[in-house]
Image (tube, rainbow, N blue to C red):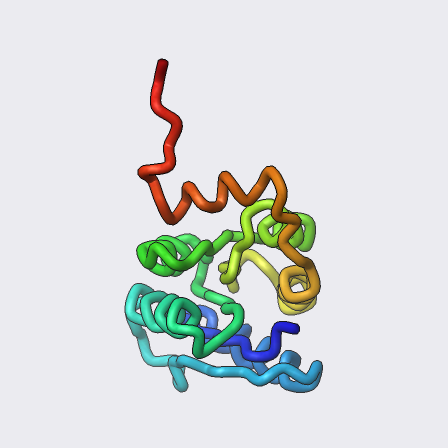
Length: 152
């Protein structure tokens, strides 16, 4: 079972981060809040990298990345080859990110996704299993580009 969730944001998403962290704790998850702690301007790559490290090193089972649009922090998180971060805005994408891509982090934009929709996305993400099977081969290629099929 997923138990430890790391969460990080930039200043634009600090309120959504706090709301999700509190809700996750109420749902019984251990939350690792990687910051920031106040609304002072920060750089989203710094927090994306922290989040990616926490998940890739096993300190967290899954992660939630937040910034104004979700785009910048998702790019930063995905620089880590052990991480598969999907930018989502509704629960179906969050579910498919788990089922088909074995995503271990989701990203959302606080300026684009409201609190209730964000909770629905996180719930779908945390309660969906990876299907494996034909999807495993594709996921393997995400971390190991050498597995790419060569043209005939």
